[in-house]
Length: 339
Image 1 (cartoon, one colour):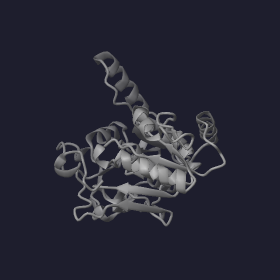
Image 2 (image 1 turned 60 degrees about the vertical axis):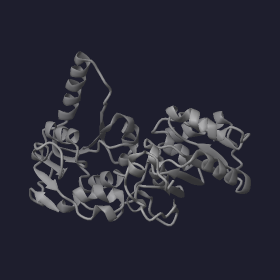
Image 3 (image 1 turned 135 degrees about the vertical axis):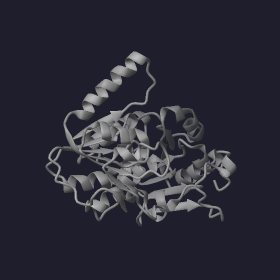
Image 4 (image 1 turned 90 degrees about the vertical axis):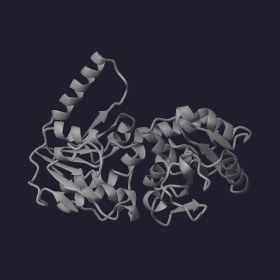
């Protein structure tokens, strides 16, 4: 629902800026919105603004012309001032005529305003600084989002202006150089090419979304022993030690790839797999976006919003009466009984 501005937008004369300052998974789920803007504005330069750790995904997207990244690294006064000056120069060149912020935070709203775009579309924020909503010329307040698939939340901001697409499913393009890098990673890890591969992603930024290690090990034994898979465990460099605890003792059947790839390389790793099993995290969305069958393990978060859609994807959940509570663990403990 449009609550500010007209549904009729002038034809953009300059560039179009799309701002998505969420986490990595949010950027994956923004791909349908990027595809929609490319379709409706084929002759305008399309720039996407993301956080630095998701930059590679945006750069590999075939529908974007340029990427601006926001680095939240701590800096001293002088270095911080120099960084913000460079960021502002990048934001104002080329000249944007339309800026769209998909989230309710103030950082994206400020970026949209500072871009100089005369038309600025944003999501109406119920809470936050009083001035935030005033930075936009157009505001959208979507309804019934709790029952929608998450990529549709981004498309909701575009829909009032006739910018729509029939396909809300995310797709990631995997360039050839990423595929070559994946082959190198598999070769260096000694992963045999004669067996199908199952990817396991046990880790999340949020502990309350994680399954128990003993359960992962039991699943890995089933996949490698009964089902004949080689198993790879993916994760960040900070999760290498935890991944090693899962893979030790499997003797050439399970391989620790945590920290062995960048975010941009991970989709290339996943696309070689025959199956992905993981918790509600960015890797689950990546696997779906490169057309790999997935099993998503869900606890307090909502599969209706966050689980991949389609016949190739399914959800494992305990089915307790309180699911999904959408809380950070039971009574705020960061631990979830449903997992």
